[in-house]
Image (cartoon, rainbow, N blue to C red; front, side, top):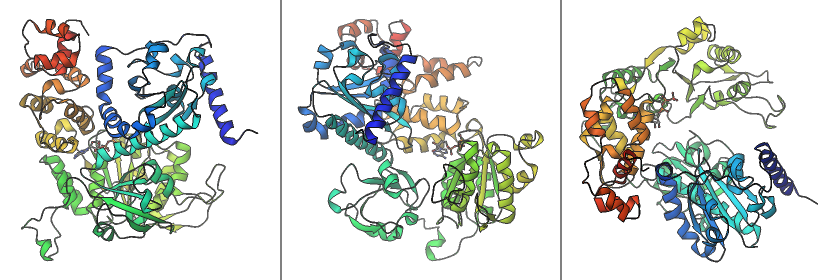
Length: 620
Ligand SMILES: Nc1ncnc2c1ncn2[C@@H]1O[C@H](COP(=O)(O)OP(=O)(O)OP(=O)(O)O)[C@@H](O)[C@H]1O
């Protein structure tokens, strides 16, 4: 008799075959080879450099012995389905359709039919595709298992697959792919956060605490969770974003941190389950330096200075400094704040700092993105519901996000996107300071600081009747505007801050004067979010300790050229052109077998410069 797992598996394969038929594939079709070459492939590889190096250097070496005699091919693909690299059995290349296994080939179902990588991408879950379950008969020589990989922000970072053409137990490749994908995800979280954050590993006994299946929480010095692996969420049975450790476990932060690092200690969850937990401190110690001018150290009450966390955001721009000053005055008053600002200017970062600087910091900050919740769920998510209130509702009922913010801060992001019926209900909560869950007659008192944010003009929305006027006045005690990045006068300091944040090595990294000039001139339509992304890529690309023009991502340079097309900025034309090379550079490139890395080394230039030169000649 088929088990539920078998049925689920069969249904997953059936659905995939159905999609393949809709794509127009036949069982005897040849795979459609859609391959990325040259610069495009290099860019894809560079874009996923962190995932590749984590897999290759931090994970694969630990599984050498498991893989040694398995006749397996391990493949890492990007979220678009393109192969980034393969490791393992060369026979796959030699015996079976060598073209299909090359780096750069896209394994999407629409091209290769049902296969582990393509089907994992399509379904977003771990899959196994046995020999005859491949849609194209040419792929039926293998069994594949694949797992989607998620990064610290839970965005899909890629897919890991293990294929075997031997008749090894099917559970073998599936088990390995689960274990390795968990290890990669853990490593992605650790490498992103270990410099500045505490890590907490926990499991059911001190012996298995170093297993990849342990739960992992990342928290800041205030004990707020900033990231977690999937295991932790499953074990603790809840969404951990912006929760504090003290809300999850029966232990005070100071006590947990006073226990020796790297040494398991017994802790209990709020549900009274017992675990062994081990903390690992940040590799760069965090903490506030003692300032001799800081009179609070001597017990004096300070009432007028800007709170520490908000102060850290003040990097010298007068408009931002004004916003920080205004907020500091109202931070502990019951006055709602509405923040305006373009996307990516740092509204959420600002609200986080505000909460951490307020007297409510030991209670939760609950952030709700009103645009991200499907309209038919906004009400139940915000106000909660009684058990059995509607079909599909959780049997235990739900307390709702507003009541979760009790004693803390409720942050309503993208407030302008809130549906009108929900606006009416929210207005009632703000007037009456009580929440009535769906399907209930009971009204529960709530006490929270309300902060809202929007990148639209809410007054226009009021005029057009899409935002309630009475609610508008309720949410705008203080109207704040955060400046766009192009308006800010402190870009140089900000660049320095972001460099420190993005740089994982222990060496200090700087930007060349040309790069700094470009950064100061660029209009930055994506604001700080865009700058963070450009700096992250540049830090990864830089060969030395200084970021040069050549290290900047191509799409950014493209933007720069377009945004300055009309202006006569001489810096750009001189800065963008790659350094002069002697006439023999092409010869050297040929002598190196057209290997860009080898030729760049030989010519003592960066790979990017060489790519640019090749492109200018139409050779890439
Ligand atoms: N002062 C800062 N220092 C370092 N990083 C920052 C700063 N401000 C913003 N960022 C980074 O910029 C990105 C965007 O910030 P944030 O999400 O707060 O912007 P936002 O205005 O809320 O954007 P949206 O309106 O699109 O939600 C995040 O990655 C954040 O970490």
